Image (cartoon, rainbow, N blue to C red):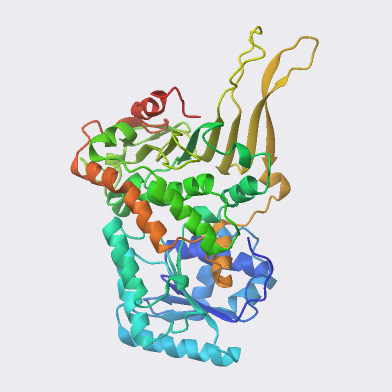
Length: 493
C-alpha cells in the first residue's frame, strides 16, 4: 500500500532474534526489502539473544536461513551489503542492566546517524514476556519519543477479552496507541489487501455488495499440517483462538466493512470496529446451533497415513482442544441483515487452501425455464493461498447452433501479473517502518474480536466434547459442519 518513501534512519531491535519466526520470516523480509531498496538508507538490525555470540557467527546463522527461506536469491554482493547492518547483542529479558546497556547501544547508533533515529522494537517472544519487556522499556526510557518509536507485537494478543484489556492497559503505560503495531500476517497477504481495491475501486461491484444481492459469504482457511512442533502452544489455544479470533475475523471485516471515506489508517480501522460491533453475539444456549468444533483422528493426507491429534507428541490422550472450528455469524446492520457469514478453519484437512466465497442470489425469474440447463448462481471466489487469484463465475452460451448455457469463469491471476510477489511480512514490516497503522489492529478491534468469541470460548472450555476425534485427517472436517450450512440450503464450496 506504500509508495517509495525516504525513510528516516532506524534501529530495529528484535527480541527473540534466535527464534523460529525471526529466522523464517523477519530476517528474510528485511533482506528482501533491502534488495528492493525499501529499507532506510541508515539502519541497523539489533538482534537480541540470551546466549553469548559474535556478530560473525550470528550473521553466518542468518545467511544459512536466508538461503532456505528468502524469496530472493542470496548473492554475495547483496549479502555483503545487508550483513553489515546486523549486530548481535546478548540480552537478558528480565534484567534491568541489559536494558541500560541496550539504551547505550541505541545512543551509539544515533551518533553514527547524526540524528535521533527511529526505533522499531519487534517482540518475537512468548506472550508472557510482553509485560516484562514493556516495563523495562518504560523504566529505561529507550522508547521515549512517541513520534519515532514503535513496538510490534505478535499474536496471540491475550487469551480472552479480560486478558486483552489488561495487556492493552499495560502497554498504554509505556506507549501511546499510535506506537503499538499488533501484527496479523494475514492482513499483509496480497489477495487480502486486494479486497479493498476490488470492492471500492470498481463501480460494478459495490452496488451489489449487500443482502439484497448476496445470499451468503464463506471464509475458509484449511491446513494440511497438524500441530508440528507447537503442541504445547496449541493445546492451550485451539483453532478458535489461534485462527478465528484474529485471522478469519479480520478477513470478515475486510469483506463486509462500509466504504471508508479515505485510506487513512484511523478511518479504515474505524470501519472494521463497526463490523465487529455489529456481529450478533451468540448466547450460551445457542452455541451448538451456530458453532461446530472438531478434532482430527487418524487418516490419510496426500496418500500419507497420519496419526490423530491425541497421538501427537505433547498432546493429552483425552485432549478437549479443537483442531477444527466452524461458525455462522450474522451482522446486525442495514447492509448485511439476515445474510449468513460462514467461517471455518481446521488442521489436517484435505488440502491447504484459504479462500473467500461470495455467493450471489439466484435470478428471481429464469428466462431459460424451458431449457434443461440449470442455472448456476453467480459466485465470486477470492483465493488467498496457495493460489492468489479472483474468480468470477457466471453463465454463458456454449458455442454452437443451439442455445445451451454453461458456467464459465473470468480470472484475475496475481501470479500472471507478478510471479515474485512480496511476502506478507515484507508488506507489514515496511508499513511499520513508514509509521502506517492501516494493516495493524487497534486495541478496540482486539477487544471486540474477543467479545465476539466470548460465549463460544467459555462454552467449549466448560463442556467436554465426547465425540472427539470426530473427523479423519485428510477430510474436510466433521459432518456437523456440513449440517451447519445445509440448514439454510447452502453447501461449503
